[in-house]
Image (cartoon, rainbow, N blue to C red; front, side, top):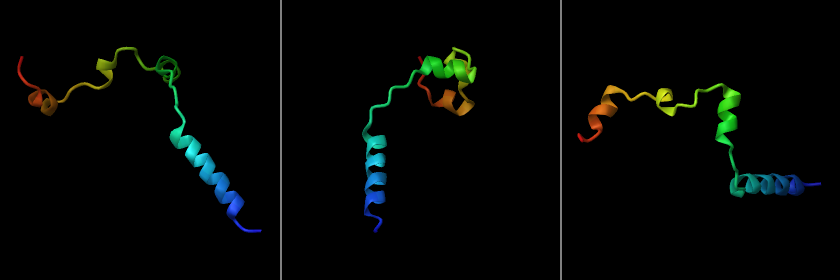
Length: 56
């Protein structure tokens, strides 16, 4: 027997993973990871990012 059937199964699985619509429940993920609900605290702006923002 050749490798054709196994290769076809791998190709089919890869195609399903690539084109499937994945819905992610971000609130549940935050709860599981124990992350605070305020996203500003997670990624504070650095000095270089503040300089690149236009003045208001």
